[in-house]
Amino acid sequence: MSWDRLIELEKASVRAGCSIEYRWQLLVSALLEAHRETEAVEVLREMDSRGFDLSPSQAGPDVRAFMEGPVFQASPLAGKIERLKQISDQRRAHYRELLKELPADQKPPEDYIAKGACPFECCQYGNWTVVEDTELVAAPGSPRVVGRAKKGTRAVGLTGEVHVKPEPVVVLRSGELPKDTIAFVLDHGGEGFASVYTGGKIVDIFLGVAEYCFRVSDSCWGEKLFPVAEQKKQVWWVQVRLENGVTGWSDKPDNFGDKDACGK
Image 1: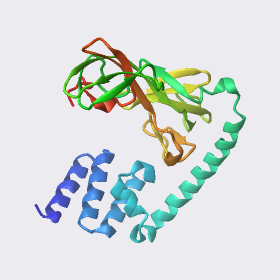
Image 2: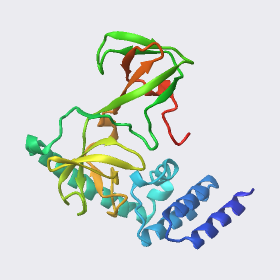
Image 3: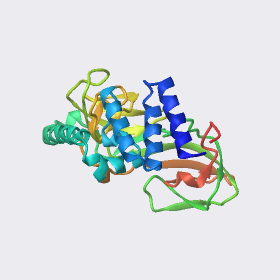
Image 4: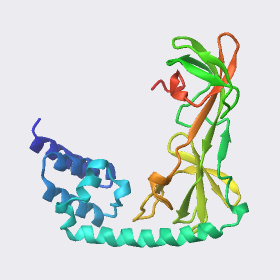
């Protein structure tokens, strides 16, 4: 199929669902693949006029790279986006200072542990397969090895816990979380939801958080206070029982199969 034909199909898809942002994004990506950058700028301009969020953190990798390049940077839209980024950066700096003064009872533990968590959609404990040889230790973080799961054998996933450093965000809209407050993202669940600490309690909420939210919505209600590079990756410890009855823990859950009840 030629690029001209593909682009016409993407345009027809947009016309059939002009309120669906994903279709516009596919059109922009197709134009970039076809090296039709000027047209891509025009589509992004139209998306902006229709109220779509054009923050770099909401765009795909190809569109983000294009928006940082010379063709887009020469457009008036680039200047608008830069001004919006400056507003967000100033707000982020303000809330970082407020974070330093936040009372201890308004913050979760620095090393938060979500016991019993199974941290993705369709995640399940139960009958697993061992896909890589794996050492088991006595407890999460323990150096004492109590057994070894052998590749090709079966094991039972008993439970688990997710160790995470809470991620502070500023809340930009009213709802389940108070507007203009600092909340903390804890462990992630399925279908885009996560546990969030706010005002001394934990709520489960759709995680609409990004580095920049130029248009506040359900899908972008909070901005991260620190760059992704400064965030500590969560660690999922799983407790398993081997066929010989030995029970132990591992921080290598990818070494075990059949964890996804959806069969992915």
